[in-house]
Length: 259
Image (tube, rainbow, N blue to C red; front, side):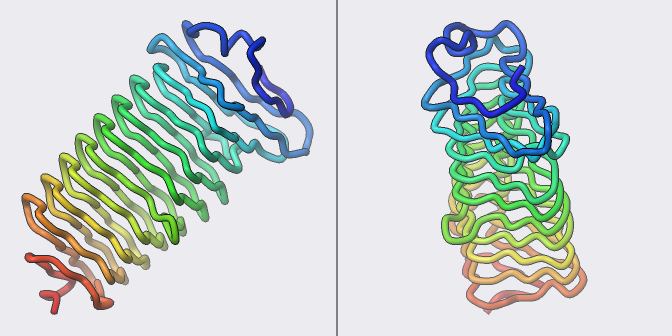
């Protein structure tokens, strides 16, 4: 169990052999923030337990890579709001989800979820930010975003490619999704049901479902493009769904057919 900041090293048992159950539990003490640095190490599991489980405490944990969490039941789980940031961490080949995070104001940047059995990223809460991440070849969805007022993307965007179902599934209110790239997923590139939010600069190519399938209220869709998706391009409908312009697809409807 980790109760304060630490940088993993070659002498730590969890870096020396595969874990039969949960790899590392983080339960911080006191009010100060803490950092767990993987320092290039990989935690390996045996298909059971949780690779890194953040259960609570303190001023919050920053999980810092580079490093990897592989072959557990779930890669990284932080459901109590104790994780404030995760950066440059790979969650790969876990039986269930790669990342499960809930809370307020946390930040997930430059992380990857690859070939996990269920979803790459399961993220919920409020006012969190998700940017520069990649979800590749996961069994179900690349990204699942739920809650309110999340910022998903920006200058670096997020990428979802080759996932078994949706590239991105976004639900809730006030979310701003920008610069997502969804390629060759088994369902829609993005599926969204958002109230008072926006989707901007989505690029959806070669998905088996629609490029974008969205519904909601007071939802703005702009500057997005969908090409070579099996079931159509852009379909966004609902109460006051608005076309912000710049949308391009062979089959394009945002409230009304796109220009």
